[in-house]
Image (cartoon, rainbow, N blue to C red):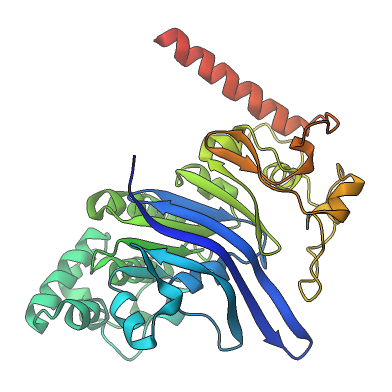
Length: 349
């Protein structure tokens, strides 16, 4: 059994606004195992970034944790002082942000920015830190690193800046890397290079990754497990095969249906908009947009039903006595493809 290094339990986070209290994160629980990649997927505004920022202690000033725990090696991170956070942040837990230009100091040389966490957290000399920074620049694929280590952020392309941000995040070999939409601003070719780089460095450094994205296509080749988030809650989680080939929640069906594939004739958008979290719904938050919704979906929040030892979904469609419904054709096609792959693998054995 892999070691569980992070355990989030019943996390609740509100935002104080002029309009009232926004219930941004509503009773979220999950764990992260050593060396694995957990992807959290969902539409913009679902709470993905707020969840990850709480893990590194970087919530906005108007955010307040209303309940729950974030246990890292048995210590509840929510009880830490800012001074204690500074020892962990960038050292044991690091983060790659979406826009590298806002993450980098335009007045500092790249080498200095990569070396700084080593000097601060590991107490190494400036000379040794710069040597390690040069090695890390080469590891993340920056050409002519000896020359470019003395350059400034504006002298690099977007893809190269993102590599630099990854170098800064990994220089201290953190146990957990939080990647918040790290490839969204990049073109498809550079995106693939960055994802391959992250996977390669993960194997070398043995870092666990929480990968935040709204792009399910990115998740397929990156994650071990996937959690589907909507309106501040998790609606489904399982292995990457569970979610891609045998999804159970209608929201996950909608996300997969909106993915382009070679077989797609047209993409299906999810109708409607997410609920107002100033006044969260009582039942399944996806019910107003769900073509398969029943009366109970509006009245009562569904518990998580177990689909398999690794797969859970919070939908009343899995309750005993629920009516049988046919998933969209794309979901049925994926399930048939998965069963055919399994049968072929069994014959090979």
